[in-house]
Length: 87
Image (cartoon, rainbow, N blue to C red):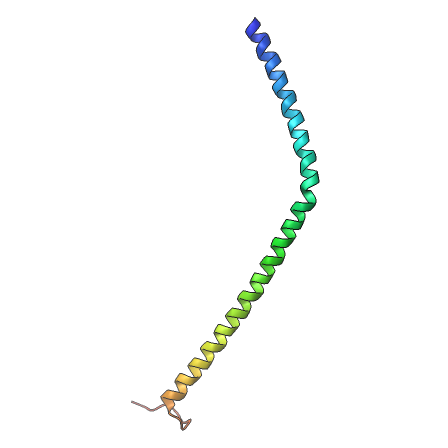
């Protein structure tokens, strides 16, 4: 019987502790909310900038590829600008 009483009292104390801890965490979360929102906004800005930079790099690479391809085709045709030689 004493063990049962200890378990009930211990369980009740643990339950009260859990409720107090959970409510404290929720209150703390409300205070941290503005900071978390700022952090997320910063992440969004960084992601947008990374996408812009990636697009710029991709465009530069595409331009370089097109220039190299045009130069190579000009080399194949020769400097006369005529059609490529037939084999």
